[in-house]
Image (cartoon, rainbow, N blue to C red; front, side):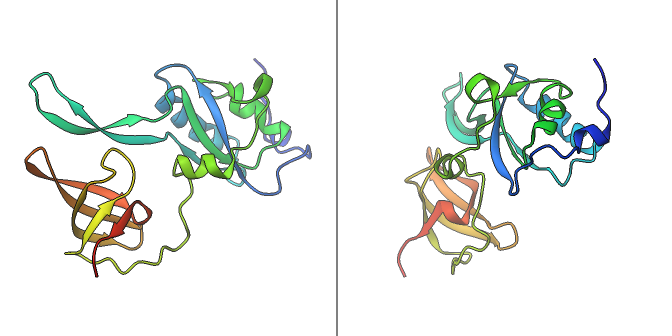
Length: 191
C-alpha cells in the first residue's frame, strides 16, 4: 500500500468549511483500537486542524451479576461505530479509511460520508452547550433526566463548573451510589 505524503493529504480538494460529526464503522470489538489508531494518524499526518474529536459513545446501564448484585457499568452505545468531528474532504478519506487500523469505512450510502444530523448529535451527547446556566450547588436535590439512571433523584455532592459535571449520590438497590452526570442531564428539584 502506497503511503500518502502530507502534501497529498492536505491537497486543495474540497474541504468542509466547518467541522461536522461523521460516523465511522469499525470491526466488532475494535472501537477502542480504531480510536487510538485514528489519533495516531491525526498526529502522523498533522491533521489536528481537520480532525477535532473522536468519540466512542457510552452509556451507563444497570447490570445484574451472577451473584444477584446489581451494578452500574459503561457499555458502548453503538457497537462497531465511532463518531468523529472533522472537516471532511476527499483527501482525508484515505487517511481515515486506508491508514487507520480497525476502521472499515464511513457510514453512509456506498461508504460516502454523510454528516450527522443535529438530532443525532444531541442523542449521542456529542456536543455540550458552551455554557450551561445553573445554580446547582452541593447539597441540592436533583433529578437525573436521561441515561440508565433517568428518573432517579439524588443529592449533589460536588460541582465542577469547568467540565460541567456534577457528582450525585443516588439511592439504588438499598445503598447510596455515587454517579457523575453533566449539567444538561439533571434538573434541580424544589427551590
